[in-house]
Amino acid sequence: MRIYVGNLQFDFTDEELNRVFSEHGQVASASIARDRDTQRSKGFAFVEMLANEEAQAAITALNGKEIQQRALTVNEARPREERSFGGAVNSNGNRGSNRPNNNRSHEPRTDKKGPAKRAKRVRR
Image (tube, rainbow, N blue to C red; front, side, top):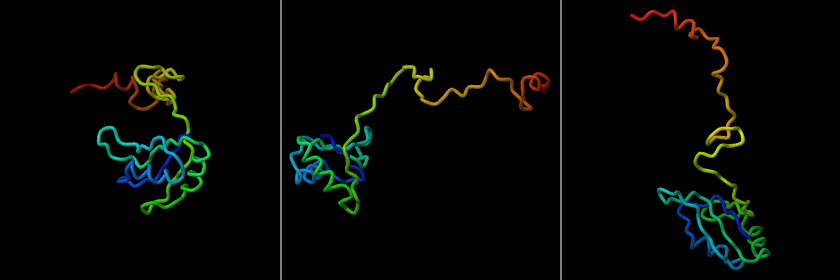
């Protein structure tokens, strides 16, 4: 079972994480999420445990437990969401954004600097 661990100190190591979870069962992997550029910890991690019963015991025992003056958030990890990169068009017909298309260029302008006012302006 894959477990999410949040609210970690930024200097917490993979080895310390492995040691904490090993007290509750066999750990397949333990890795802290790190920034791609700086390699600085993001303050959360994922732990993979082989037995579901041991993973549930670790979640129960460690959720809310204070380690290095921080109360951990420990729960079952949600599945990773699919992310698309590049020129893919989303369901709204936009590229790269899930925001609705608020382009109102097809509507006439109603402010004082509309096309009619601009045409009458004299350059000096």
